Image 1 (cartoon, rainbow, N blue to C red):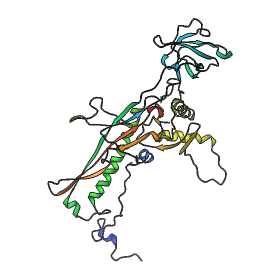
Image 2 (cartoon, one colour; image 1 turned 90 degrees about the vertical axis):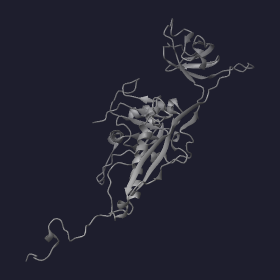
Image 3 (tube, helix red, strand yellow; image 1 turned 180 degrees about the vertical axis):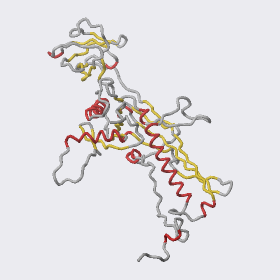
Length: 387
C-alpha cells in the first residue's frame, strides 16, 4: 500500500527541516588557461629596469637586388644598378636568382650605386637580367699577394621593451571572513586565487597582442606604461593570402604553412618550433591529415588532431590559444622569446592598510616580453575565420 507517514516531501519545496546538501567544490568554466606562457616557461633572468633592452647583431648580407630598368641589352650589359652597392667587393662571384649565369664583379661604384661585372664568367651562358631580380653573392676571390680588402662590419643594435604593471584589488569584510563558507575555508585566499588567474590570462593576451603608447611610452602621471607584444613586434615575415606572391587561398592550407616556414628559414638562422593559433585555424591544421587517414574494422575512435607539425624547416608544437586573433597563425622560435618580470615584481600579494571592518590587499606583477630577432619569427594573417 502507499506510504502515509512522514517523508522528506511532506514540508513542501523549501525543506526547512533538512540540512542543505552542497557539494564541496566551486565549479568554474571561464577560460583561464595560458598555453603560450606554459610553453615558454619561467625565464632564467629578470628585467632590471622599466625599459628592458637587449643586443642584436647580424652577419654581412650575402644577397642584394638589381635596381636598374634602363637596360641596353639585359643579356650583355656589364654595368647595372643595385640596391646596396656597399655589399659588393671586387672579386665577388655573383649569381642572379633563377639564372645559371655566373658573373665576376670587377668594379664597385658605391656613390653611383652600380657594379661592373664580367658576364658569362667561367664559360656560363649569359642570360637576361631584370629590375628587382635578387643577386646572390657566392663568395670573394682574392688575388694572391694582394693587400687586405676594405674592412666591412655590422653594428650591434639595442632593442627594448617597456614593462607593464598588472594589478587587481581585493577587499573582504570582517563578517565575510568570519562566517562559515561552503566549499572553502578562507574567502581572502580564494579571492587571491581568482584574481591571479585573471591576471595571468591578461598577461598572456598582452604578451601576444599588446602594444606601447605612441607618445611617452615610458609612462607618466597620465600615460600608462604598456609592453609591446609579439604581433605588433613582427614586421619582416608577415604573409597574407594573395599579397606579394603568397598563395591566394584564404583558408589555411599546408602549402601556405610550409611556404611561410621556408621563407622564414631562408631569411634567418632560426628554428621555428611553435605554431600558435586560435580554434578555427587549429581545425584547419587538423584537416591536413584528413585525406591520409585510414581505419580498419577494429577502430572505434575517430582521431582528427595535429599536436606536432613536422616539416623540413622544423618540428613545431601546435598550441591552441584563445588570445591569438582568429585570422592569424603565429610561427615562433620559442628560444628567442622570454616573458620577464621586473626584478622582485613577479606576481605577489601586498596587504593594504584597512580603514574599517575589512581586510584589503592588492595583487601586483610587472612584466615585459623579450622578442629577440623579430625576423626569426613569422605570421600568416588575413585567413578565413568561418567555414
